[in-house]
Image (cartoon, rainbow, N blue to C red):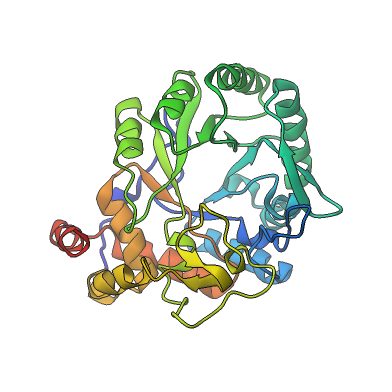
Length: 333
């Protein structure tokens, strides 16, 4: 069943007045292959840049206008692809990127971090060049464990970038409510980016967003693909895909990219509820996030036009209703 009421889709970035809608697209996957210096993959495998560009433009046509990337995704490549796709259509989009990680664009590797205000400026100017734009709508600190004193300096640096017209608002990508609250003390802090999905709720972060008038930009809304229905128990991830050798934080998959024996049964337990009323599994998982809070903007990843169309199709179904939300809670209890 599809909903004709679109009022629920209205979202504004904090006090900025920037309208973003209820769904964004995450641009990590379209960065292609990149790695740590020792060769451990950090991307999602090979990509077709022409398909990526077409998918972004298709998303715009379907009403998705918020695109979230980071300078380190693909060691700069994701920003370049996004900038290319938005050429001539920049004013239709709200662009978010992140900074803090150090990387080698030629070698396509990430190595280290820099939390200094001076580096924040250098990273910002470099992102503007790669994106081919004169402003970034939401500039986000990408280092979730930054100490409070350093974060306070970076918050003030971001206020300066707003005053210069280089950015319109800023945020922190962190799963720590106390850290997010520190950034929220800044006049132009508009959001917090954090993990949340139907398998792993984030009540503390969602409560903070409500209290401080922030948007919750939701990363991993589909549990890195576990909630798309495309990751069957016997399917291994391809070489160059971070899921093939998952780091400690990527607990939805085991070695080789096989869905975790802990999480896969929980997906099956709620599959019927999430796919009710004609939704796909991914659309149901997005609907759960919208049912969870009116401040959520999930940013599922994509690599193809078909994936862009499926994710955007969730908007026609809207949030899961209260009965479905209660049923999911019961099944996962």
